[in-house]
Amino acid sequence: MREQKTILLTLCLAFVFVGCSQMVEVKTDYDDEANFETYKTFDWLHTDTSSMNLSDKWALADQYIREAITKEMKEKGITWDAASPDLIVAYTVGMKDKLGHVDFNVDYSVTQKNSEIYKTSGGVFVLDLVDAGSDHLVWRGEANAAMNVDPSPEIMQNNINNMMNKLFREYPPGAKPRR
Image (tube, rainbow, N blue to C red; front, side, top):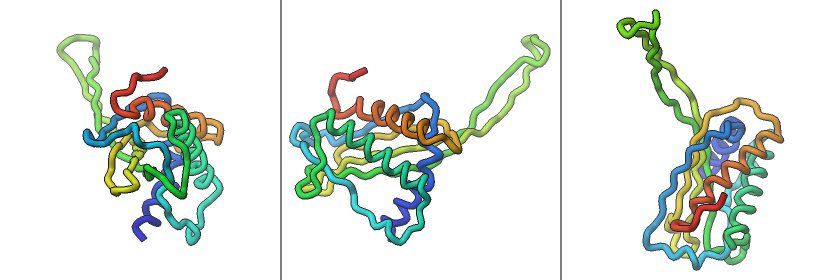
């Protein structure tokens, strides 16, 4: 049941996040003890979505995300193998709010200033790579970006590809960044 809720949240929010701007902040963390050179195959965390009534847009977002992850993994020498995976790939999407403020001069003097407080919403995409043998999380990538509520399929796919490219620049840990 928890997996179904996770996939539903993921797919329902994916459209919001994947329509993000080019300004994507990426953070990664990893297990210092993991030997990333040994990971050559992956499979997806299996979730049952058959009982969910997902729209075509949500299914399309999931497809784009999986295709982009598969492409990036392949470029790292890791191929999809459901029968014998070294890694299990899982992702989730969420939202978070940020508060900010702007100070500005009312009459262009130094003495009179006004402040404005604003709230922005952003999308959060979290990608987990789990060692299939030990069920131990070995790498996590997180991408944060502003949102576009209803992107076209082309924009959605482009933004997903760009986000995955930025995330996978940090994999494996210690790799030379690619451009």
